[in-house]
Length: 222
Ligand code: SIN
Ligand code: FE2
Image (cartoon, rainbow, N blue to C red):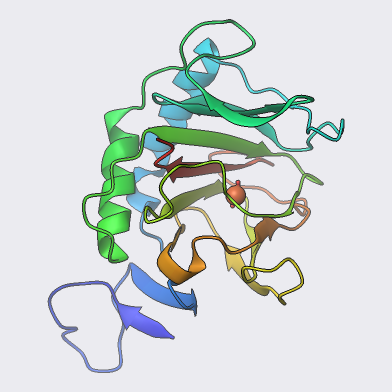
């Protein structure tokens, strides 16, 4: 379903303004191209964060090394190692606090949440995922947060990927949608505990990221 995101009605009936909203499931939307004009600024901010807190491939509690490289910014960073998944204030690599969340990140997350019907979203955690060709994220729930009334705001940058959104049970059949650079997925309420993942990244090229895809996941952890 396609709906104009603009507050003012479309000037021409039947035409949609950019950005626009795609509803992919109950309480789950993609704000198409929402972050497109901020691509360069966001990527520069990611590079700045990665200088202080480099991307790394973390281990799962099961002992697998994740194909997606990660770093974090904000008050809380999501980490995983053989002792489990958790949020913590400091980068386990350096022992230093995670870099602060840039204003461009916070503003984008708040604006996207508002556009999707969640005014007042104040993320305290941003996970930054970096996918190289072949990297994937298996179906999982985001459930290490305290307050499930807060939505998830997920920003795609770079090479396109196929995002899967299922239901509250692992066996619920997921819907697939292609996310291109600047797309923002927001899910909450009845979809907050939905399983989701990203299919293996296909080789591709993006003018600003080369063969890579980045994803920013904003959450209220505490
Ligand atoms: C995630 O669920 O943590 C990542 C989603 C994405 O990369 O689009
Ligand atoms: Fe997730």
